[in-house]
Image (cartoon, rainbow, N blue to C red; front, top):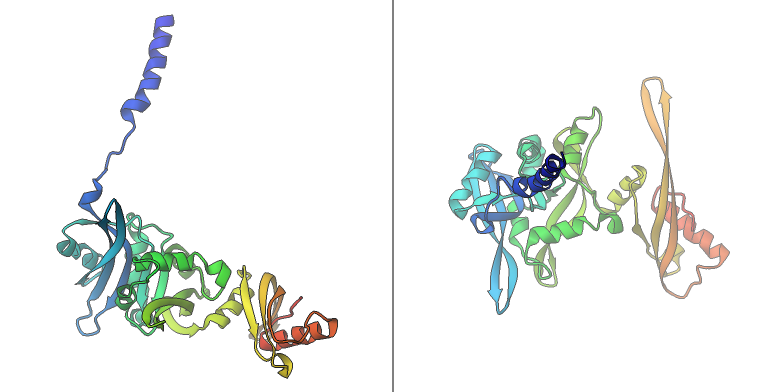
Length: 318
């Protein structure tokens, strides 16, 4: 009896050692690791143009430098264009580390479902990948410009998007949340926008503002400040800045930081029309005063509060 029990125990301990392992592993040197992808569409051929940013490494002494290289292909569908990139890389694409999907403005106006369906449906692409709309540039042009702090543009965009709570100038748009929002009747989605901008003699991608969708079609934009107020109304504000220039004609500039915000929505029904009263109650603190006026006095605080409420539809508490 004891021998049987010991045999069973031995088998139980032996099974995890024998059976554990990866059934579908691939060596890293047989894969092309994708950092990000840009999706455009040729208006003449009506074909999708896919541009992938592939991670590369270069030996420098005893260490390695991570960089990237772009590979493009086209096809009648997004998936076919993605598959044809293998002809350029010679390697199968590995998508689990992909950070961003960038959609061109023209394609977004036509209808974005055709572009994001594969990324949302594929079991190789993570659902929490960032979704961006290129504004004024093709999606591929966003990936072409390298950032000095990070040689991989997609990684730079990922780090920027992860800072949305501090900036509150763009939406935290992901593929899964966008597709989920499209399935909700009467709901419009907002997606962060990116454009190339000249900075100290170098063109680099800048994430700011939001692209507004009606169903799956792009219909307009909000700038950075308008996006901040949109996030306030939706009770999604975390932190942010409000800059007041020449407060009450005093020549003083004041920067306020938002520490907290609460929004109250009151719907009004009148016959067949519906309107909404939006009350936003942010708590802000003074973080910078450019000038000599003492805004810490009660009478000056009231002036500052009044100026803040004039600048935006807010009832501020300082």
